[in-house]
Length: 252
Image (tube, rainbow, N blue to C red; front, side, top):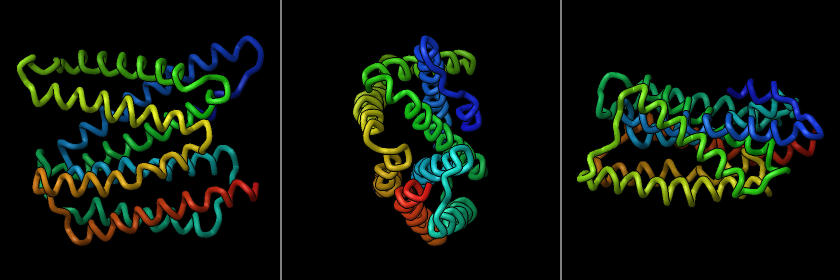
């Protein structure tokens, strides 16, 4: 998906509106993939691991800028990529907490990483249209495309909505719509006017910590010591990569 972004060059004149509409449609589908894979990963891995792996999006946005826009990485940022990989290995390889569907931890981790790649693609695509469109237009189009894609996917998978008397399910859906989506993602979209996609992703680094604590309190999910060490290494690596981003930009 990140490669597809690079293939769309910026045109001029009357083609700008058509190009923006195409980019917003792709961004909306990427957002749908993000939510679908992230939520699906919770069946196969723990809340803490899933949320932590989804938070790796800054690594993928930085890697995209390095490969496509030829922005050099500083030595410290390159070290951050290596240590981040070690952290991922520790998290996936040594976490022994049993998820709802045991025996498929690697599959759940893969789904979460796809979710990270998808939200990274979303941020990069929105960056491409940020100069031409305001936040309201961007979220209206991308959220609409995401909703449409998810409805179609649910129909194909034959997954209907919860029963009307399922208060817990509908409360969760309402909370995700109003808090996670309307407030969270809309605020991140707006911040792209002033910050890079990697910098915006930095704001999500506390999310895995909060999620891990909440999962421990609510579900009793515990994380193996080696996986905790991997989580700490990964979070520090993410912070290093993001901290080095302004230096890489200055050296271009």
